[in-house]
Every structure is written in structure tokens, then in C-alpha cells.
Amino acid sequence: MARILACDYDGTLIDSFRGSALIVFLKTLFFRHFRPFYFLGELFEVILGIRHKVHKDAKEFVNKAVSLGFDVGIITDRSLFSFLISARRAGLDLSQFSFIHTRKSILDWIVYPYIPDNLVLITTSLFKDEPQALSGFEIYCAIRGVKLEDVVFVGDDIVDEISARRMGFKFFKVDRIRPNFEQINFGQALKTD
Image (cartoon, rainbow, N blue to C red; front, side):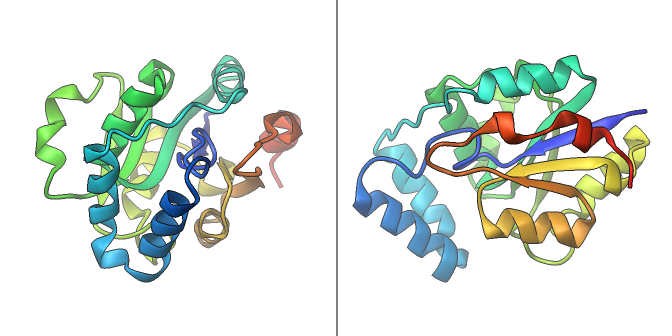
């Protein structure tokens, strides 16, 4: 039986909430209160050349999921433009991932040539906790023959949990500063309710 593991990006796979308190404050402010202008924060991050690091155990976690037969991907509120630049700067190996779900941006066309061949791209104009935001991902699951209740979503934020619960995914929360991927029991994730 096919299984899908969807990971949040910021705070889950990378340490985007570390560093300058000002940057963390601005990022949170833009995301929570100025969502229509969120892309300005992303652009600011790109222009300043801000680099995040992949969390220490994230690579091993993804490798383990792939070895257990999970179709692994990323669901993020970043635009494709911001995500690909950030992932490249962080040194995140995208070859293990099957899909990426991002928000649309007027700047995405710049990075289209750099989308790895192994990634299925799913985009939306909505933030992931908004109704219908993951409808493209729902179609992806249907094409792969995976029921929504067989999707495991790992995130660090209430927004991730809201998204997962709304869609009927199994949800595992990790700490955004020091995520403990070992707490995620793949045996439990593989169980059907």
C-alpha cells in the first residue's frame, strides 16, 4: 500500500526560526498579519542572502521514510521561487522528495528551469491552512492511490496541524528549534485506524 509523508519546510526541515530576533519577528509578523504581502518577506530573505541550515536529523528522517516506502514531499507556504532558492542555499538534497506543494508567486517563472525532474510541482494561491488550499495535493494523492487518512504530515506549527486535521491526515508535531524526529513512530504512522 502506498503511503505519503508530507513535511513542512520552515521550522521542520530547516532552522528558519533561528538567528536574528528581528528577522524571526518580521517573518512571523508578515505571515500572521500581512499575508497578502508575505512575498515581500521572502524577497527580502532572498536579496539579503539569508541562509538557513537543514536540521541535524532531517536528512536521516527523510531517508528512513523513503526506505520504508513512503512517497516523501514538502508542503510549504513559501512560493516556489523562495523555496528553491532557500533549499539550494541550505543544501537540502531534493532528490529524495517526490513532490513539492508551494504558493504561486509572480517570481516563480525565474526558477522554473531549476525544478528537479523528480519533483511533481503542486501550486496554489492560498496559504495551506485555508480551505481548498490543498485541493491540488488531494488530486495528487488520488492519482497515487493514497487515501487522505494514509497521509502523514510532520510540522512545527498550529498552521500545519490545522491543515492536517482539515484534510484528515495523521499529524506529528516537532519543535521548530530542536525537532526530535525520533519521536515519530513510523509503526504508528503506518497503522490504519
